[in-house]
Image (cartoon, rainbow, N blue to C red):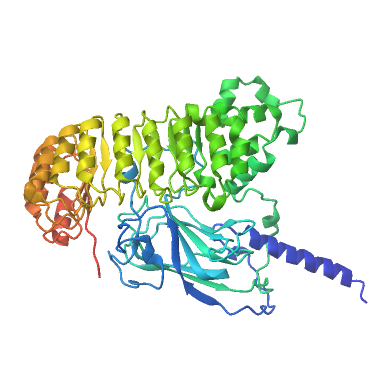
Length: 621
């Protein structure tokens, strides 16, 4: 045997390890850099037959434009093969999220962002899709039919939603991610990102979106998953690797590493016994606190491992007054919360949105956290928190006497009786109940015992029987109300609008989109404009009866108006719109999509005369 054989064997093993490591480090959808590639002449290993499948079912989502009782513009349209593609435009058979653009989150009544949110986390909405067969993904095609470009992250889950056995471990792995992008064309496209290889089969994908740079609502038609059932072997027809890529980069996935640090490494026992802290010994305590206050949570965890002085600073509860754990939803568990407890005694803002699903957080783990931080808590974000149950809301009511803001958006697993506990939070100023199962009795109790409410979201609350009664109580009890969302409330009439306008003179934002029982002929919209001169945002979406009289009254009475949506009306003429634009100098957005008298020529003429106003006009083709 040749003396070179052992050396060749070692080199071959080293080369294989290099290839595996480079494939593993490929993140954010980037495969091996082509500039460094030197293609081998070796023959590729055989691959399994590729399977192609569309989503079988939509399991979960954060919001949608459509109704809970229909299919139009809902996330459920993502199940099955495409309905619209390759056509472009606004179609009811597609999936549409609730918001778009930056303006939605920049108006006067919107919430302030958390100070310490990880800069790598930019997701605003999500949808989870189940497929028939688990596969090792080789490609994903997302069919976007209108204003594409919202997808910022794709994740794969190791759990099979159709399995009869409970998995011992649930892993979410990012297979592609990117920054929000602005796509100039609203035309349909097939989006095929370059995904990362994973080491487990999956039939559960999660798409996360950010629509802040989009000009209008994005519309998704279908998701096509390509994959093989057997784990693909690493082909020898891979590219050669630049040796600079072999650095020990343990911080590629910053968010995941941060939570691992919380549960495994955030311990003083792991620190070396340093006797010299360098120049930090000479800095005032407050200055060091100010410096590290700019770090995101994962970076704070890493810094805590450098020396005992910085460990003490990183464990100071003053660093955790604003605590957003939403970016770490994929790995946040009861154990993570347990390690955070000593540092949470002064938390005032807490964001647990999207966390705890599939058993990651238990009722007892959530309760222990609130027992530590509840007395100081002012703001609590729990959107899409499907771990929540009645016991959790009871704990919130008991442990958070100073709570002013509570977000339960899309907590659609909460039973109706659970919401009665919210009435004990008498200091509430903001309450978001979008897409929840709250019933009328519980809501009336909340309105009676929470007179300081300033912001209330009841969008898509389908179990409320009499919105006129609700509007009357709001007008009688909530005199400080500044924003009210009644999106898709099914039975409010001019009676409720009249009592609302008379009782809440401070209203600045009112969403009456898709409220089919409101009719302009009753004078409800003109009365609204007359009684609420401070209106800045008014959505009358899909109300076919809105007419020139309503627009002219808005122009005369609501001159601070900034956002107006009259999508779908057939009775508004270009003349009244010109008058509105001339009188409302602060107007930022005007949606006239599907307004039959406002064609593209009129939109272009108005846009040229009023360049500071974004005039929306959707199309189909």
